[in-house]
View 1 (cartoon, rainbow, N blue to C red):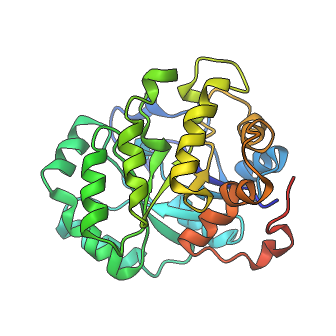
View 2: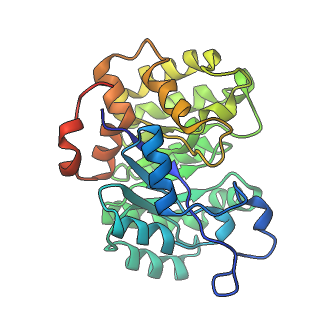
Length: 288
């Protein structure tokens, strides 16, 4: 079946002609950069056909690599880009990105204190109507502010929202990781909200196939429906083989029927973000 990874980071080296922000070098997920070409090799080994590329925060607000990869490999990569939260700078960047080839949406992270404060004080409030008007979906990582995500969803019904990592936050694992699950499930009432089931091995202390994840996953899928749950790996951060992150969903969740599995593993995400399936039509709806 078509397998689409909802979150992968690629990045280049910290070098004088393309420097990272000071003090960020220690945050890279791997000691060596991950290029688009190298990622394609890893995807082939794992059986992944497409990936959504997201600029990593340690490079700063840069979209050049993900857009370049998406332009060069348009049916393999799509980009969710970053824009400044400040309205003056952000509007200009958003206008430039709105027509950029390969750009599928925007991603914002509010899990650190500065970002959380910005979200709660309304700094990015200009983004939601602007993105809705432009038809651009947004990914939001705001695990401690799901109530704010609910407010955005309620006030901007035309905005397609994707909640990152099922609203989970490191370093929590097992039952502790899902202590906000009722808040997440409330968001299922808003038809403009979907969720990314990404980086899940990070939130389990159990070895593969992480049996403790089955019950909360089933609750999420029952609430949102398979058309609003998107599998993904975040594989440079997760301490698990890429192929295992795939087979966790394709082989180890017996409550998923073939149709729901096909939706979660790729079809639903492509439909949600408007990523044409012409080049992968032969894979639509088929099971592994």
